[in-house]
Length: 369
Ligand code: SF4
Image 1 (cartoon, rainbow, N blue to C red):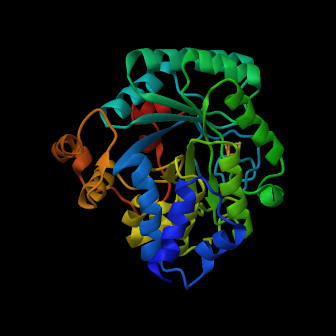
Image 2 (cartoon, rainbow, N blue to C red):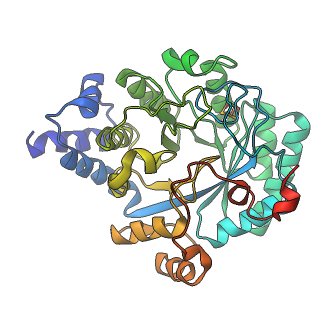
């Protein structure tokens, strides 16, 4: 394809036009559309809104396991036999210590994730107090993922200072019942609407590789645009042994990058995060994700390990990008080189996190219930 063909995607996207489904399918599948100019086109849009800056996110698995839902991709689901380190909500001191660490590690946002269908009133009140404390002690953005919530609970969390609520759509409406039977796609949309109505910013994304079609992927990208979601994590299924969806999906690095480009074209101003599974599915092409995406997780995901912070920082520096943080990329790298975090001895071949990864702020003894 001629250069002008790719320029047309950039022009349409920057003008706020929505690409047709035919264009979207081509972006995902056509060999006529070459990867490098496609990535460059996505980068033109990313650069317009976020320059060369990368946001780093650190996720805290604040409560692990014991979930009555059956999301087929999740190691905490009642339908999963995955060997995870289940524990109830971490105590306040532990969460505050993790938030402090995230802030001092250069994270722009601290993401607190709780397993479960949704919080009780008592749990919402407790979380509101926690959020207030974090926000009063550290100038860090706070995001919460807490399952399905109602408008009044969203209001309480908003008043406590919550910046963002994460609630992924994960897949399209048509495919939803194939990946979960204990709640519906409509439940998820209602939660996002409740948060949006009280002024909480939205974080919601997709998991690619769950048997969906390209039409499903396109529908999710367009729905997130309609919902005006500001932050979009694009996950690629991590095939955790014991989960219902435990088979390795047939995703290629090229397809994953095409998905990221599509999300950028359809959501030009959003924070597009290359999220769970990037290490497994992008492999040697991981760095290329920085062209369509402007944010990523460091130190892994809920129960699965990921690239360590120092490796991520080096990748960003080597590719000529910068970070959005309270310290410079160079300062953080220097700090990491000096500390034991700079050690490259992490066993990255081991997929699952152990208790030391999940609860770094407590002694191993007291972590085991
Ligand atoms: S994704 Fe959330 S609601 Fe679904 S099983 Fe996992 S912890 Fe439960």
